[in-house]
View: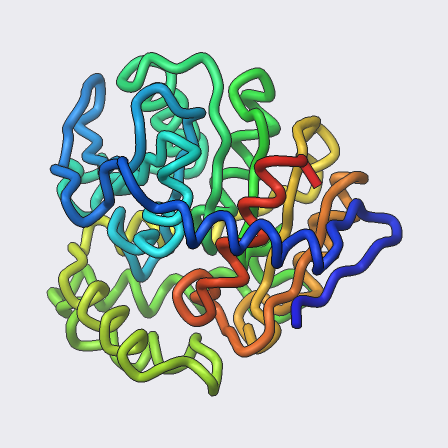
Length: 303
Protein backbone atom coordinates (compact mmCIF):
# COMPACT_ATOMS: atom_id res chain seq x y z
CA UNK A 1 0.00 0.00 0.00
CA UNK A 2 1.00 3.62 -0.37
CA UNK A 3 2.45 5.23 2.71
CA UNK A 4 1.28 8.73 3.58
CA UNK A 5 2.42 11.01 6.37
CA UNK A 6 0.11 13.70 7.64
CA UNK A 7 2.13 16.05 9.85
CA UNK A 8 3.15 18.66 8.97
CA UNK A 9 2.19 17.84 5.40
CA UNK A 10 -1.06 17.66 3.48
CA UNK A 11 -2.19 14.12 2.74
CA UNK A 12 -4.61 12.18 0.57
CA UNK A 13 -6.43 9.09 1.74
CA UNK A 14 -5.48 5.77 0.17
CA UNK A 15 -9.13 5.07 -0.54
CA UNK A 16 -9.41 8.23 -2.58
CA UNK A 17 -6.33 7.22 -4.53
CA UNK A 18 -7.86 3.85 -5.38
CA UNK A 19 -11.02 5.53 -6.66
CA UNK A 20 -8.90 7.89 -8.72
CA UNK A 21 -6.88 4.98 -10.09
CA UNK A 22 -10.07 3.28 -11.26
CA UNK A 23 -11.17 6.42 -13.07
CA UNK A 24 -7.81 7.01 -14.67
CA UNK A 25 -7.27 3.50 -15.95
CA UNK A 26 -10.79 2.82 -17.16
CA UNK A 27 -11.39 6.04 -19.12
CA UNK A 28 -8.79 5.87 -21.88
CA UNK A 29 -10.69 6.51 -25.09
CA UNK A 30 -10.96 9.37 -27.56
CA UNK A 31 -7.55 10.93 -27.12
CA UNK A 32 -4.08 10.93 -28.62
CA UNK A 33 -1.66 8.55 -26.88
CA UNK A 34 2.05 9.07 -26.40
CA UNK A 35 2.79 6.14 -28.70
CA UNK A 36 1.22 7.84 -31.71
CA UNK A 37 2.34 11.36 -30.84
CA UNK A 38 4.91 12.85 -33.22
CA UNK A 39 8.03 14.61 -31.99
CA UNK A 40 7.49 18.38 -32.19
CA UNK A 41 10.12 21.09 -32.20
CA UNK A 42 9.93 24.69 -31.11
CA UNK A 43 11.83 27.93 -30.73
CA UNK A 44 13.62 29.93 -29.33
CA UNK A 45 15.78 26.97 -28.30
CA UNK A 46 15.15 23.81 -30.29
CA UNK A 47 13.30 21.73 -27.71
CA UNK A 48 11.54 18.58 -28.86
CA UNK A 49 8.51 17.24 -27.05
CA UNK A 50 5.74 14.67 -27.24
CA UNK A 51 2.08 15.15 -26.40
CA UNK A 52 -0.85 12.98 -25.38
CA UNK A 53 -4.42 14.04 -24.76
CA UNK A 54 -6.44 17.01 -25.97
CA UNK A 55 -5.17 20.50 -26.77
CA UNK A 56 -8.06 21.91 -24.74
CA UNK A 57 -7.01 20.01 -21.61
CA UNK A 58 -5.17 21.54 -18.69
CA UNK A 59 -1.46 21.55 -19.55
CA UNK A 60 0.63 19.03 -17.62
CA UNK A 61 4.36 19.07 -18.36
CA UNK A 62 6.68 16.16 -17.57
CA UNK A 63 10.45 16.44 -17.03
CA UNK A 64 12.46 13.23 -17.31
CA UNK A 65 15.49 11.97 -15.41
CA UNK A 66 19.11 11.60 -16.47
CA UNK A 67 18.38 8.07 -17.68
CA UNK A 68 15.41 8.99 -19.84
CA UNK A 69 13.71 11.13 -22.45
CA UNK A 70 10.20 12.26 -23.33
CA UNK A 71 9.16 8.62 -23.78
CA UNK A 72 9.84 7.75 -20.12
CA UNK A 73 6.41 9.02 -19.03
CA UNK A 74 4.28 6.76 -21.24
CA UNK A 75 2.33 5.05 -18.38
CA UNK A 76 1.39 8.35 -16.78
CA UNK A 77 0.71 10.30 -19.96
CA UNK A 78 -1.45 7.66 -21.59
CA UNK A 79 -3.55 7.30 -18.44
CA UNK A 80 -3.90 11.02 -17.70
CA UNK A 81 -4.47 12.01 -21.34
CA UNK A 82 -8.30 11.95 -21.05
CA UNK A 83 -8.08 14.78 -18.53
CA UNK A 84 -4.98 16.80 -19.39
CA UNK A 85 -2.91 18.04 -22.27
CA UNK A 86 0.15 15.96 -21.38
CA UNK A 87 3.47 17.30 -22.64
CA UNK A 88 6.86 15.64 -22.12
CA UNK A 89 9.95 17.54 -23.17
CA UNK A 90 13.31 16.21 -24.21
CA UNK A 91 15.71 18.08 -21.96
CA UNK A 92 18.43 19.94 -23.90
CA UNK A 93 20.95 17.39 -25.11
CA UNK A 94 18.45 14.51 -24.89
CA UNK A 95 16.19 12.82 -27.40
CA UNK A 96 15.42 15.04 -30.37
CA UNK A 97 16.30 18.34 -28.66
CA UNK A 98 19.33 20.38 -29.63
CA UNK A 99 22.53 20.13 -27.63
CA UNK A 100 22.92 22.45 -24.66
CA UNK A 101 25.65 25.10 -24.97
CA UNK A 102 28.97 24.45 -23.28
CA UNK A 103 28.79 25.25 -19.58
CA UNK A 104 25.00 25.29 -19.43
CA UNK A 105 23.90 25.22 -15.80
CA UNK A 106 20.78 25.23 -13.64
CA UNK A 107 19.83 28.90 -14.19
CA UNK A 108 20.16 28.41 -17.96
CA UNK A 109 18.06 25.25 -17.84
CA UNK A 110 15.37 26.90 -15.71
CA UNK A 111 15.19 29.86 -18.09
CA UNK A 112 15.06 27.48 -21.06
CA UNK A 113 12.12 25.67 -19.46
CA UNK A 114 10.41 29.02 -18.89
CA UNK A 115 10.89 29.96 -22.54
CA UNK A 116 9.64 26.55 -23.64
CA UNK A 117 6.45 26.93 -21.60
CA UNK A 118 5.66 30.59 -22.22
CA UNK A 119 7.02 31.12 -25.75
CA UNK A 120 7.15 27.76 -27.51
CA UNK A 121 3.91 26.42 -26.03
CA UNK A 122 2.42 29.89 -25.47
CA UNK A 123 1.14 28.95 -22.02
CA UNK A 124 0.76 31.30 -19.08
CA UNK A 125 0.90 28.48 -16.53
CA UNK A 126 0.91 24.70 -16.22
CA UNK A 127 1.13 21.78 -13.84
CA UNK A 128 4.52 20.05 -13.71
CA UNK A 129 5.92 16.61 -12.84
CA UNK A 130 9.65 15.95 -12.61
CA UNK A 131 11.69 12.82 -11.87
CA UNK A 132 15.17 12.96 -10.31
CA UNK A 133 17.03 15.80 -12.05
CA UNK A 134 13.66 16.81 -13.50
CA UNK A 135 12.44 17.30 -9.94
CA UNK A 136 15.54 19.32 -9.13
CA UNK A 137 14.85 21.64 -12.06
CA UNK A 138 11.26 22.09 -10.86
CA UNK A 139 12.38 23.17 -7.39
CA UNK A 140 14.35 26.06 -8.87
CA UNK A 141 11.72 26.77 -11.51
CA UNK A 142 8.80 27.05 -9.08
CA UNK A 143 10.81 29.33 -6.82
CA UNK A 144 11.92 31.58 -9.69
CA UNK A 145 8.69 31.60 -11.71
CA UNK A 146 5.85 31.06 -9.20
CA UNK A 147 3.29 32.58 -11.54
CA UNK A 148 3.89 29.81 -14.10
CA UNK A 149 3.85 26.78 -11.80
CA UNK A 150 0.24 25.89 -10.92
CA UNK A 151 1.49 22.80 -9.08
CA UNK A 152 4.60 20.64 -9.03
CA UNK A 153 5.11 16.96 -8.30
CA UNK A 154 8.70 16.09 -7.36
CA UNK A 155 9.54 12.40 -7.75
CA UNK A 156 12.69 10.65 -6.49
CA UNK A 157 14.62 13.86 -5.99
CA UNK A 158 16.56 15.78 -3.35
CA UNK A 159 16.74 19.31 -1.92
CA UNK A 160 20.51 19.41 -2.47
CA UNK A 161 23.10 17.12 -3.98
CA UNK A 162 24.81 15.10 -1.28
CA UNK A 163 22.23 16.17 1.28
CA UNK A 164 23.23 14.97 4.72
CA UNK A 165 26.83 14.44 3.65
CA UNK A 166 26.03 11.46 1.42
CA UNK A 167 28.68 12.41 -1.15
CA UNK A 168 30.52 15.39 -2.59
CA UNK A 169 29.69 16.90 -5.99
CA UNK A 170 33.15 16.34 -7.43
CA UNK A 171 33.14 12.68 -6.44
CA UNK A 172 30.00 12.19 -8.50
CA UNK A 173 30.57 14.54 -11.42
CA UNK A 174 34.29 14.44 -12.19
CA UNK A 175 34.55 10.77 -13.26
CA UNK A 176 31.43 10.97 -15.43
CA UNK A 177 32.46 14.22 -17.10
CA UNK A 178 35.99 12.94 -17.67
CA UNK A 179 34.71 9.73 -19.24
CA UNK A 180 32.30 11.59 -21.51
CA UNK A 181 34.97 14.11 -22.54
CA UNK A 182 37.31 11.22 -23.28
CA UNK A 183 34.87 9.65 -25.69
CA UNK A 184 33.27 7.03 -23.47
CA UNK A 185 29.89 6.08 -24.87
CA UNK A 186 26.81 6.21 -22.62
CA UNK A 187 26.24 2.60 -23.66
CA UNK A 188 29.46 1.67 -21.84
CA UNK A 189 28.09 2.52 -18.40
CA UNK A 190 24.31 2.60 -18.79
CA UNK A 191 23.74 -0.95 -17.56
CA UNK A 192 25.81 -0.59 -14.40
CA UNK A 193 24.22 2.76 -13.59
CA UNK A 194 20.63 1.62 -14.12
CA UNK A 195 21.05 -1.60 -12.16
CA UNK A 196 22.53 0.43 -9.29
CA UNK A 197 19.60 2.84 -8.98
CA UNK A 198 16.51 0.66 -9.43
CA UNK A 199 14.96 -1.25 -6.55
CA UNK A 200 15.27 -5.01 -6.02
CA UNK A 201 11.67 -5.51 -7.14
CA UNK A 202 12.12 -3.67 -10.43
CA UNK A 203 10.88 -5.84 -13.33
CA UNK A 204 13.66 -6.93 -15.66
CA UNK A 205 11.86 -5.49 -18.69
CA UNK A 206 11.82 -2.07 -17.01
CA UNK A 207 15.54 -2.32 -16.31
CA UNK A 208 16.30 -3.27 -19.89
CA UNK A 209 14.15 -0.47 -21.30
CA UNK A 210 15.92 2.07 -19.07
CA UNK A 211 19.32 0.67 -20.05
CA UNK A 212 18.47 0.93 -23.73
CA UNK A 213 17.14 4.46 -23.28
CA UNK A 214 20.28 5.63 -21.50
CA UNK A 215 22.48 3.86 -24.06
CA UNK A 216 20.91 6.03 -26.75
CA UNK A 217 21.65 9.23 -24.80
CA UNK A 218 24.16 11.75 -26.09
CA UNK A 219 27.24 12.83 -24.18
CA UNK A 220 26.05 16.44 -24.27
CA UNK A 221 22.82 15.66 -22.44
CA UNK A 222 24.44 13.42 -19.86
CA UNK A 223 27.08 16.06 -19.18
CA UNK A 224 24.39 18.70 -18.65
CA UNK A 225 22.41 16.41 -16.33
CA UNK A 226 25.58 15.59 -14.40
CA UNK A 227 26.36 19.28 -13.87
CA UNK A 228 22.77 20.02 -12.84
CA UNK A 229 22.73 17.19 -10.30
CA UNK A 230 26.14 17.96 -8.83
CA UNK A 231 25.42 21.68 -8.54
CA UNK A 232 21.88 21.34 -7.23
CA UNK A 233 21.12 23.20 -4.00
CA UNK A 234 17.57 24.47 -3.44
CA UNK A 235 17.67 24.55 0.36
CA UNK A 236 17.29 28.33 0.51
CA UNK A 237 14.78 28.51 -2.34
CA UNK A 238 12.19 25.94 -1.31
CA UNK A 239 10.51 28.33 1.12
CA UNK A 240 9.64 30.58 -1.85
CA UNK A 241 7.52 27.93 -3.54
CA UNK A 242 3.85 28.82 -3.13
CA UNK A 243 1.99 26.39 -5.41
CA UNK A 244 0.64 22.98 -4.32
CA UNK A 245 3.46 20.44 -4.07
CA UNK A 246 3.60 16.65 -4.01
CA UNK A 247 6.85 14.93 -3.10
CA UNK A 248 6.94 11.24 -3.92
CA UNK A 249 9.66 8.63 -3.51
CA UNK A 250 10.19 4.96 -4.10
CA UNK A 251 10.54 3.10 -0.82
CA UNK A 252 13.60 1.29 -2.22
CA UNK A 253 15.31 4.38 -3.62
CA UNK A 254 18.88 4.45 -2.36
CA UNK A 255 19.92 7.44 -4.48
CA UNK A 256 17.35 9.91 -3.16
CA UNK A 257 15.77 8.07 -0.22
CA UNK A 258 12.30 8.81 1.16
CA UNK A 259 13.81 11.03 3.84
CA UNK A 260 14.67 13.51 1.07
CA UNK A 261 11.00 13.76 0.09
CA UNK A 262 10.12 14.66 3.66
CA UNK A 263 12.94 17.22 3.80
CA UNK A 264 11.75 18.95 0.64
CA UNK A 265 8.19 19.09 1.97
CA UNK A 266 9.30 20.39 5.36
CA UNK A 267 11.29 23.23 3.81
CA UNK A 268 8.40 24.20 1.55
CA UNK A 269 6.16 24.19 4.61
CA UNK A 270 3.02 22.75 3.02
CA UNK A 271 3.30 19.73 0.78
CA UNK A 272 2.02 16.20 0.41
CA UNK A 273 4.41 13.27 0.81
CA UNK A 274 3.84 9.80 -0.59
CA UNK A 275 6.15 6.78 -0.45
CA UNK A 276 5.54 4.11 -3.09
CA UNK A 277 6.44 0.49 -2.25
CA UNK A 278 8.43 -1.86 -4.48
CA UNK A 279 10.14 0.95 -6.35
CA UNK A 280 13.58 2.51 -6.49
CA UNK A 281 14.87 5.60 -8.30
CA UNK A 282 12.71 5.22 -11.42
CA UNK A 283 9.49 5.07 -9.43
CA UNK A 284 7.14 6.01 -12.27
CA UNK A 285 8.20 2.96 -14.29
CA UNK A 286 9.07 0.48 -11.54
CA UNK A 287 5.60 0.71 -9.98
CA UNK A 288 3.58 2.93 -12.33
CA UNK A 289 -0.03 2.32 -11.29
CA UNK A 290 0.10 3.82 -7.77
CA UNK A 291 2.26 6.68 -9.03
CA UNK A 292 -0.26 7.57 -11.72
CA UNK A 293 -3.17 7.27 -9.30
CA UNK A 294 -1.44 9.49 -6.76
CA UNK A 295 -0.64 12.09 -9.40
CA UNK A 296 -4.25 12.08 -10.58
CA UNK A 297 -5.55 12.66 -7.06
CA UNK A 298 -3.02 15.42 -6.45
CA UNK A 299 -3.79 17.17 -9.71
CA UNK A 300 -7.53 17.04 -9.02
CA UNK A 301 -7.44 18.10 -5.38
CA UNK A 302 -4.07 19.77 -4.83
CA UNK A 303 -3.45 17.35 -1.96
